[in-house]
Amino acid sequence: MNTSLTPEQIHHIRLALLARRKALLDEVTEELASLDHPRYADVAQEVHDRGDEAVADVLSEINLGVKDLHINEIIEIEATIDRIERREFGTCVACGDAIESQRLLAFPTAKRCLECQRRYEASRQQKIAKL
Image (tube, rainbow, N blue to C red; front, side):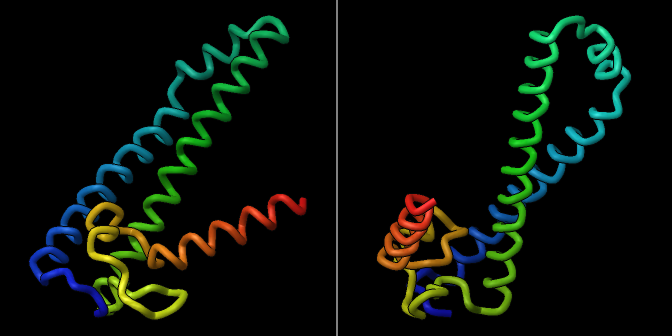
């Protein structure tokens, strides 16, 4: 493990990640269960015009977007827990150097050091600009 964090700090980060993952899983499970709720069928039947349909579609897309964000965060958390267990937590996946401890404390799922993250984001912006 390539970090200046203490084992105790890493342990607390792991516990916080596990708690966040549980909360997200509970929320996603609840949201998915609510999709089968009869109330949604009633709302769908109450949509009478194209404006109402558009609003219903937008609300549905927003809900799906939020679920996607939650699922992506769960994936990132699980990857971070895996890096902790493999003793690779705190090592930049791009350059192999240590990720700054302040960065890990503020953003535990960080997988790149600050410099590599800046380069990564700049390259993504360039790719998007070319589209």
